[in-house]
Length: 190
Image (cartoon, rainbow, N blue to C red; front, top):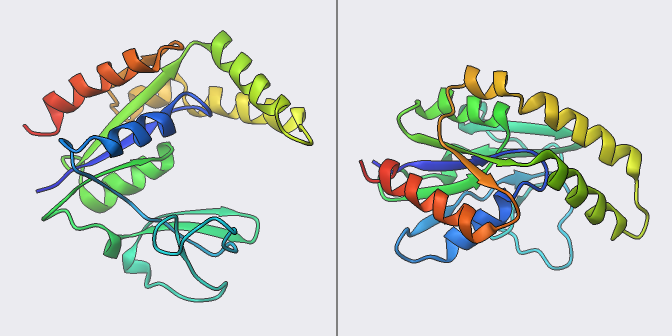
């Protein structure tokens, strides 16, 4: 039976970098979970590779939907038809509500949540630097995201969900990757 590894953590803590690096490593043979969205396809995106793009109003049976996120008129969701745990292991990023949905759908023994933790000072500096690179920086949204992340990923919320695999990203992504590989060696093939 395959497993689903989910990276969780606040904005810019390194989840996407870890996911991208591990997806390239052949010894893990991770498959990516391709989410479905109702938003328009961007010029550089490929249907079925970046997302499954569907027209607003198209339906997917609720029995297939594992998790769904709504941002205004745009929906993003994960469907069970895109996951074959008999043959594959999967790697993705999510939030705590997504973790709850995956666990409810597949059971706790299939899901390996890894929380990516980052020093607050370093994270706020990274978030600020990233926002400054945008053509029209919106520092109020940046502050709202930061405050929401602090609440969402509180020690209490992490403990409540029994997330015990935690990696530290303090600016050295190679060290964080090594910590992640140690966890995967213990949890992925037990």
